[in-house]
Image 1 (cartoon, rainbow, N blue to C red):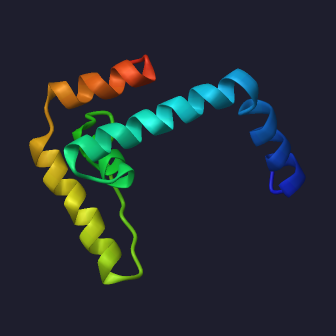
Image 2: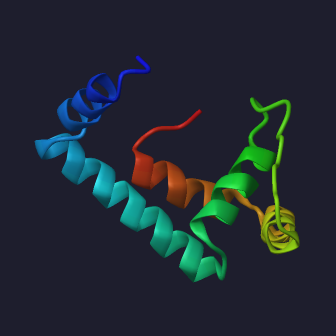
Length: 97
């Protein structure tokens, strides 16, 4: 799997055609949800992890203080987390935990 041609083939094969369009739709939708809430997609993802009872540990990494600040903003979003945010994400993904 470390072979770049293998991973390139995998991405091209899995995310081509309809699957690619579905992935792009999801990514755009998540961007819209994050923007509506006043956060970035990365912060939305981290807040989702914090809210998800199936996630036992969240390890954050940073090499610049600005990155730490961005990660901490995800905690702000987590404090605002409610079922309506979760429902929007689940509707977009067409699944639930």
